[in-house]
Amino acid sequence: MLIHSRKQRGFRTLITQEKLQTILSRLKSQEGVRGVVVTNMEGLPLSSDLDSETTENVAAIITSLVGKALDAVRELREGSLSFLTLDTTKGQINIAPDVSEGVILVVLKNNE
Amino acid sequence: MLIHSRKQRGFRTLITQEKLQTILSRLKSQEGVRGVVVTNMEGLPLSSDLDSETTENVAAIITSLVGKALDAVRELREGSLSFLTLDTTKGQINIAPDVSEGVILVVLKNNE
Image 1 (cartoon, rainbow over the protein chains, first blue to last red):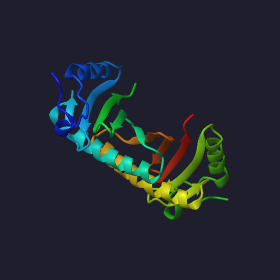
Image 2 (cartoon, one colour; image 1 turned 90 degrees about the vertical axis):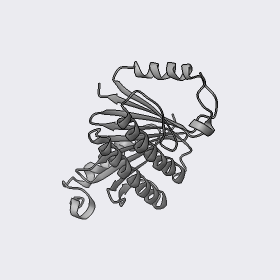
Image 3 (tube, one colour; image 1 turned 120 degrees about the horizontal axis):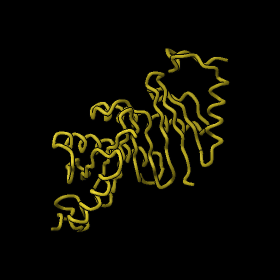
Image 4 (cartoon, rainbow over the protein chains, first blue to last red; image 1 turned 135 degrees about the vertical axis):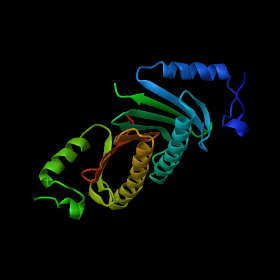
């Protein structure tokens, strides 16, 4: 099965659903990982292993934060943003925005 | 010389200017570090080794981003924010907000 093209779902290139699932499974199997969410740049979730309410919250809130971080990096002339990491008292939120592909990968981890 | 109390400058406890300078000097001496800015939560710079225009930009833009990140962590119920890291094509921006002290430490690094 192919996932939809960017126009429909936020992916420019066609990658197989299987390939995406393999990557996500590998991420999820890492120690401490409690959730992996893929969203498009508009905050629409494309893939998630969390419940739908949490997924929608993560997608909306993180997409908005990424927009602000992209603005900050541009205004400070620091090139382009590769990763955004939030260390919290509960764990870590790793965010990898891929602007050219129009997707954001979010990995939620517990403290070790 | 003592730096001002929180009411005036954003520090709750009085620490000596010398002690602050020692900490900042240690940070600046690390490899790849090209700038260290301390700002209060309103974006007013308290200490910096960058030119005044860059300092004001960093203080304003990073304070605004930290506000958004604090909101995100609270809304996602992830505890409290300890660190925020931006990896860019130019290097890394390390941000340590201390809400109780009302200050934000920003360290700008080049890629190694």
